Image 1 (cartoon, one colour):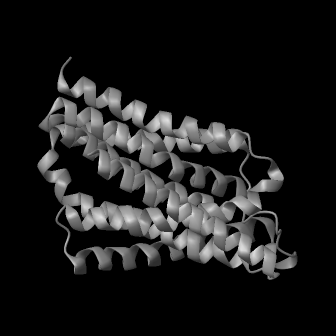
Image 2 (cartoon, helix red, strand yellow; image 1 turned 120 degrees about the vertical axis):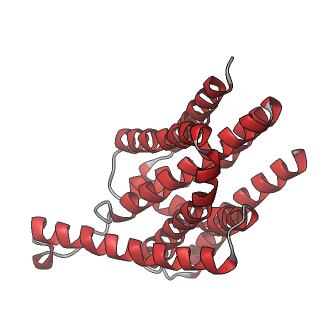
Image 3 (cartoon, helix red, strand yellow; image 1 turned 90 degrees about the horizontal axis):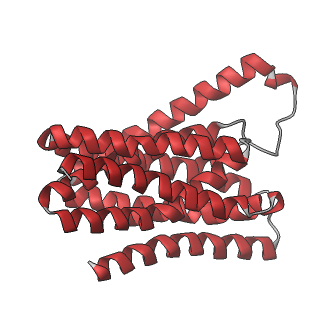
Length: 257
């Protein structure tokens, strides 16, 4: 089978399989679990940003000043994006005249995490293509590693979409559509790998910015609504578990590699 066909196949499977696996887990979660599992999502987002995405951006040739500047610009862009979503919601629903709905955030964090996830999936496609174009076995191992790495992050993304007010069916559809960016990145990289390689550090910086912004600006403030000691301990443990899941997955795959 030609290399391009393997890239297409691995990109489709790598994106869709991780989304479906995460959705199966999240579908089994009761609605009452979502606020608690948001703590886990925070840890998974921060772990993916600081332990995987940013280090990888440095490894592929991005300078410290380039990556940190991209990260800063990305955070500011997501701040502006959230303001625009808030402005639209207020002018549509006259939110200034009503108390905010504590149940969800009217899709703000869900929208931003979807944008960042799309960037991240695009980079995964580029990585898959580069691996297959180097060696077939390397491409297979890389695709399997990306699937394993994406599952905990996709679980977090799915839970954030539920927290934002999306239904489970909508969350699955949005994540599946975002996963198509893996295919786009793989095909484009096959035809223009050298050009794509130069864009990857910036793309990774934007992806990390979305995860950090959503975790710190949108999700963590909601945890402060429960200030009792047992709730705080539960949140800290779940955040640590989310970070630990990403770290252990990276360590395990690194050991296998």
